[in-house]
Image (tube, rainbow over all chains, first blue to last red; front, top):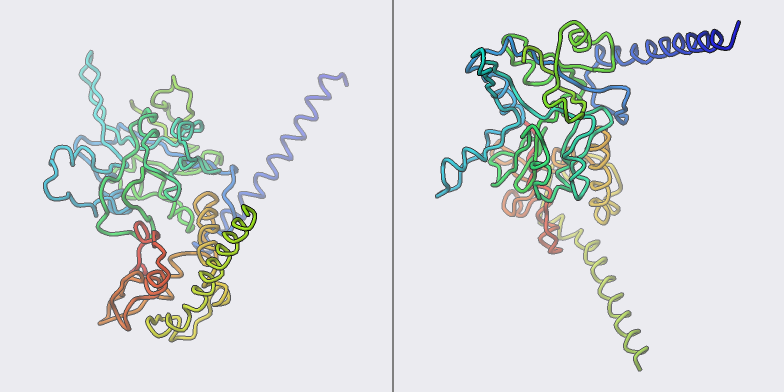
Length: 253
Length: 133
């Protein structure tokens, strides 16, 4: 056996072992979910990367079920305009974790509707510019704001190429127990982190979509529904030129 | 001369600190008279000794909030929602916020002590002062 063959053999053995351990680690994880939806008691790791695939060909014009579900889940609607405020400005600055975007190809006239939220980049620009470390990427790929250390400077809002973040200008009417939020902080989609940490495996927008256009799951697990769908259908990252390796991928754009 | 002044200032600071610490630990009896809570009446067990909690609850909360936010661990001792769930009062079938100055037996669990010691209470700008329904 020459050197080259020997290396290849070693590589094969290594891959085999790798595959065996991967199965072993996936199995207890699966068991954990089916037995009991228990709150997480150990730190998140990069063995999981949460991600999403959105099939925009299923998105109907005027549908905003995912936006409504997101608002309901995270308490975004419990926010009322102060007296004397300008209504247009207020409406523009209202917190939006998901925006509905309409894209038209001017040559063909083809219109695409898509939900746009935090893309959960592997290299998030919002994290790069944050002066306090409040904007961070969790080990399992969720990009979020630690509101305890956010000073409300809004650099991240300027840095985000997806316009995904909102600033809370006024006191909120209701403080949701699951997703605490308040005046003076920036916030954005966090893949319903309170659900994931309490053993659930779906997001509110995914559950609400009548067309099942949103598939959510673990990008690192080749058997997950989202990985299978990504392998099967052609998808793109929005602003792929920025090389951010987004966790949300779109098909049909 | 300068040395003596410095020593004087230092001892004065120490005295003030000592007074502040005893002030907090002696808030105990008054706190019991002025407030009540589910925990005090039901004989529930706190995550630490009461004496320790009176002085150090803020450190525990701050430590564990970082663990929850950054590592996703939800089963921590210093869980504010658990504090609220145990220490909240009920009046006419609904919960009274733990940071309210009025309610059954006056100021509520958090408000009573924080008003007495003059320490601003920031948690409930974002967190719910009543348990989840």
